[in-house]
Image (tube, rainbow, N blue to C red; front, side, top):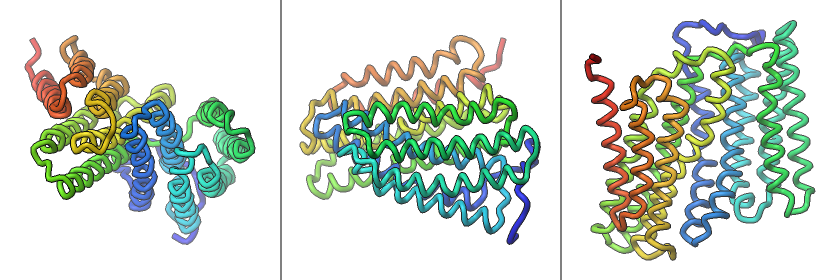
Length: 382
């Protein structure tokens, strides 16, 4: 339609699914995720894990929060008319500008291009919230206006961040990130927007697939380049095989439970949604870690074997533990089911000290966690 009044969608809408525009929006985030992962690989391979992990967290927060802002709004107010599509495409343009600024932000603490990208996204998203407010009344209108004001205030603060001394920027970033996280909490105190539980869970699942897909892509390119340049197939096969098992297990474990059955109110949804920062970031970091392990195997990374192993095992363990915390534990029965993923995460961390076969062993542990989980879930209760 050329134009449709923007009113809240029904929370009980049947057969609600992601739209082609939402899928296109997600796909454009691959560029930003790839940029963040590439900078993390470089930092870890050069022996700067502290700076690498810190920089990766900051730039990945921007990726995740931009995606979050659009996803929850779309779940409540997607009308799929011409103005809505144009506003979404403008947000995509902002994402691409942000991606272009990732390396500057990561390496030099220069957030100029990244903030410009966010400014583009925020202009479009604020207009969407104002449009939603125009179609609502009462508490729903107040919530939409609060979102719009919150976006404008936070964005003005991000622009102000550009003029802060370099030594203050990281600390001010944390303060502004906290302010961003408070906007939905404040806006939804008197009215819960009409997000759709099944739709939200599907959207998060699709983004998880994109993150894991980027991990596979980055890992494949790294292995191919190493084989072409060094012909070290015997060294790379254990890393490639173990990495693939880790990613396969990550996919299996994430999609093992019907999370939409639990999300009913903001009390469950907000911690669940915010907690996915760790799921998405660790999922993407697995691919970066595999690249580091490959570079170490062929002598391009000047770090210890232990550090190269940790680049894979730490994000892998964090992924499993966070999925258990947010997802799985709510559907598990009995100590055996509850302990499977936490113990698997500890076992994967222990693989860090397994030498050149650490990634392979971590992959086998991940596969065993899936097998044990399936066996326990299908066992006839007594």
